[in-house]
Each structure stands twice: as C-alpha cells, then as structure tokens.
Image (cartoon, rainbow, N blue to C red; front, side, top):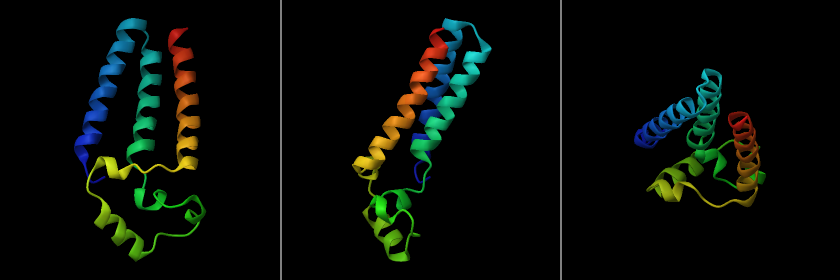
Length: 110
C-alpha cells in the first residue's frame, strides 16, 4: 500500500466504532464481530492490487503486463484517481458490502 496514512486512519475509525458498539451493546461478542467485519471491509477496499483490478473486467483473467503496471504507476497521483468508476466492480462491491453491513446491523441491533 502506497499511502499508509489512509490505512492507519481507517483502523483508528474502526477502533472508534468498536468502542461505540461496546458501550451501546455491552457485548464482547458484538465488538468482535464489528472488528472482523471492519477489518475485512478495510482489507477489501484498501489492499487489493489496484493495477490488476483497475482494468476492464474482461482482462481480469490475464496477468498485468509490465507496460500496464508502468502506466498505472505513472497515472497514480492521489486517492481520487485511484477509484475509477467501473459498473461491474461497483455492483460487486455494493452487493458484498451491503449484505455484510446488513447482517452486521441485524446482529448488532438484536
């Protein structure tokens, strides 16, 4: 990961959410579930090899060439340019994380 500050701030915010869940629910089990869901969410959003996933979906089955990796490094200038809009990837993320957040919310509120 090129920018560790984003990763560190995400973990700090996760710790804040875990403390709030612990205070509100007074349940160690719910705090641990919040930790697991949060770490998986952070890992899924921040840690993938973006040079690989920032391509068209049809090219995901082939390895990243040296030219593609060099082009990706040259174009990388910040966090905003890192997240390009690909409808299939957006739908997959929305489905997976939406379902995980829904199940987490149901478990926390019960």
